[in-house]
Image (cartoon, rainbow, N blue to C red; front, side, top):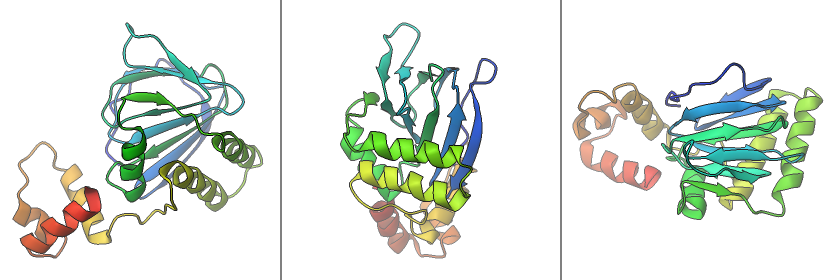
Length: 202
C-alpha cells in the first residue's frame, strides 16, 4: 500500500492494525484528531457507537456521521470524537475499490447511509474488544467492504501478475515507467499486459 502523507497531533488513538493485499484495518479506542493528510487508499471510517467527522480543509464545515468515506488522494482532516472507530483502507485498483469508487466517487467525502452497516461495524468492534483472532477480524472487515461494494471481496482481488507490477510501480513513482518494463515484471509481453492491466485496474 502506498505510504500515506500523514501528520498527526500526538496520538489519535490506541488499538490494532491488520493488513492484507489491497487493504488494511485500523481499530482504535477513544480516537482523536488527525490533521490534514491524503493517501491513495479509499478510507472508510465507522463509529457505530458514536460519530466521526471529516472535512477537506480547516475552512470547510465538518461532515459528521456514524460512517463516512474519503476518496483516494483527497486531502482531508479526521476527528474520531473520542469514539471507538474501525477505519478500513481499500486500494482503489482492487475489485472492491473500483466498486466503492462507482458507488461513492461522485464526492470527495461522503456520509455512508446504509441501514445494514451499523450492526456489522458493531460486530467488528466487539470482535476487537474480545481479542478475536486476526483471521476473524479480517473476515469481518472483508464482510463490511463487500457489503458496501455490493459483492464479495477477498485479499487476492487483483491478478498476482498485476499485483506484482503495481508493487514495482509504486516503488518507482518518481521515475519514468514504460509499458515494456512493467510487462516484463509481470512476465507478459506488452500487449497482453496492457489488456490485463486495464481489465484489472479500470
